[in-house]
Image 1 (cartoon, rainbow, N blue to C red):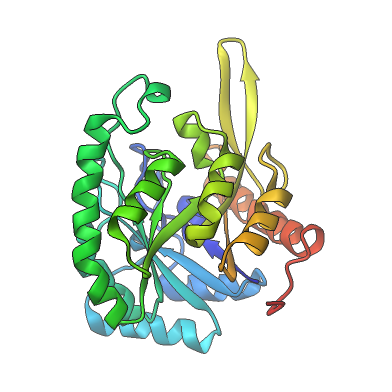
Image 2: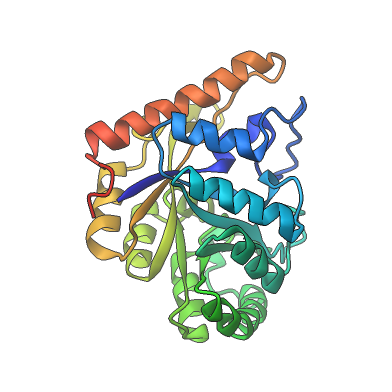
Length: 297
């Protein structure tokens, strides 16, 4: 397996996708090219790249970015959102445009976020008619785009984001029925729709092209609980089992670490330091505990 980083892990450095109304309280701290230097320094082999990392989308700049990644020996995957629910996630929302962006970068996977609107109660909304109506539209977009992706050697990976049950993703993939359309597994996201995350991982692994290898901690509070971001191996997801499922039941050859911490927003240096330290601990866990070595597959 190769070990890489989902760039949302550096959202406090100002290079992640916009999400849940969060706005970074200080200026961007890394250019795209500085990001690649950091990735190499972190002993990583690739980048799962949020569209928000890119300063521009013109082809000349994208080819520069792709060349820099290739020179550094890094694989690239491209992460974008269709934003079907109107959440304003990311900067690029057209699937065909995202495929052309990935081609210009030299990325071989486009992670697709649907970002659906779900009715409440979420726990009772699996295959709800309003959800199916949205997913039918996504299926048609994916069917139409699949030949273009195939022509460019690109695979499309639909994420089980905070908007979908794993069974719904499988329904969608069956409906599209294309060898270049599969899943992106986020190891935590099942919790957001009240699904057992390990069950979601197990269901989706045979259909997955890529992943967000993320761990969260369940923090109990007087009024209930909340999920708090953690370094990989320090939360409450069975990351060893998740890795085994990826390794043994999927065709995936990359692990993309993702971390997202609760940090102070009145001290930039402290926040940035916490972010980098969590990534380093995650890399150490993957290398030393899980035994993910360079080019071991």
